[in-house]
Length: 291
Figure 1 (tube, rainbow, N blue to C red):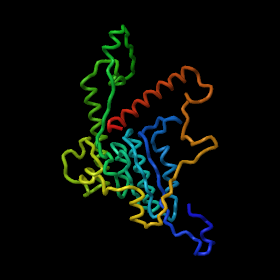
Figure 2: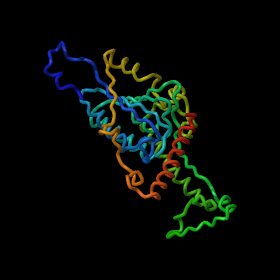
Figure 3: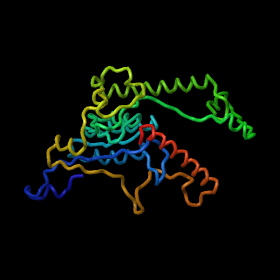
Figure 4: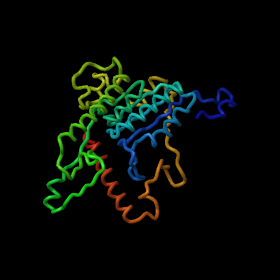
């Protein structure tokens, strides 16, 4: 916020610097998280975005995106929150891509009025992917009998311990096509006639920032400091907006039951297993782009 003392200070002592709030949105996009493995979701992003857009005199908000993607729902919710705040507060949104803004990360980037990327950034990956493992033969060799009881004929769809069914796969692909079309519509609505005609644009491929500019996925090549100085002058002052901190560190939007003191050993074990799986999922997202 602007310093209230500025109004009563003599003019020669007032700062004429233009303050630009800067928000960093980094990490895989998923709702599960821990203190040691922060991730990106609407719950974690919303408070920081609100603080940034509440800067009354700032003509724009700069958002740095560095994400390989993740949940399509959380990605779209963050995108929508940025656009709602931009309209409500009448501010321009400048998105700066660091290492990667791919898949859901690119969906968030599309919330910007402009997207500025490093020439070696990775952008795009406009598609939908779902992955799992099949353990049917493994449990058979171990002499394990799988017992599943359901109320509802499709409740155990795509169970990794049962043989894959063609109708289950087709149902999943139909769902993916719906989600993919939502992604495509969002990109088209955001980028408009800046997009070029290219058969691979919505295929799930990803490109460098320089190639992304040629395809219309990115507006220009540059970095945050240089771009802000060119737009707002040498006295521009980027101010990093961070989440509020409690006495013991960064506040978390929620605490899982397995992290509460006194939780049973079974809960702790389940939480540990869940943490391993979530970490593996996150690493797989980054690894897809060589990061």
